[in-house]
Image (cartoon, rainbow, N blue to C red; front, top):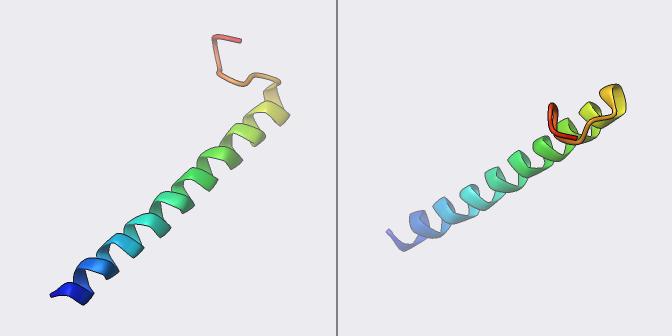
Length: 42
C-alpha cells in the first residue's frame, strides 16, 4: 500500500510538470505568432 501511494504522488508530479511545460510552450507559440501574451487583453 505504501509503495503505491508514493508512486501515485510521483506520477502526479510528473504529469503536473508536463502540463506546465505544455502551457509554457503554448504561451511562447502564441506570443511568437500573434504578439499577444493573453489573447484579447494585451
